Image 1: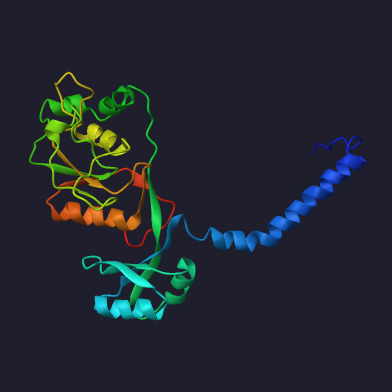
Image 2 (image 1 turned 30 degrees about the vertical axis):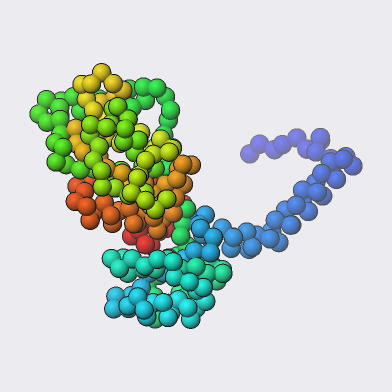
Length: 261
């Protein structure tokens, strides 16, 4: 076993001061470590908002009573299909801790922050490798797609007047960020995803989509590519209720997301 030469390891006064400072900082970090762990118990989430899932058989009115009893200041929204409420509370983590295992409550979780996943901005990124990798050209010899198939892009919306998307876009989506029926993309991520899936082929414009199908938009992320899990859930439900065949999402969160499950 090799032994290090220790002749040059004696601390000078400066070295000793640095060592003492280092040990002091370590002690401070250890002192506050439990607090740091508590602060990072959950991922980033909407301030003062909690999603409460109700047990089967628990009604909305019963859920309101339960939420109020545990300190909810108001019920912001209720989704009958998920049987869950979006509520406002003074302290998110305290409410969740207090309701854990409570009768009538299936789960309580923060309204987690969700973000668009990273997409490279290289000019020819989309068709340098992806289409050959899935043998798209071979598949196109048999079938290029059908407009009767509808894909919902659950993302930042779609720039539906884009010349390489407009012909394949169908209305009927929704803007859950701004609460209106105009899911126009003000970020670009959703349009990028829509283009990969269904950009118009053989128009001498932009790229070729994987399939010539219809795309619609559920705008659940804002102009910075940020959104909340409750809105994502609403977008998914709305897309399913409007006869969507495929739901495409390129987004993620660090949190374990019960309402999405």
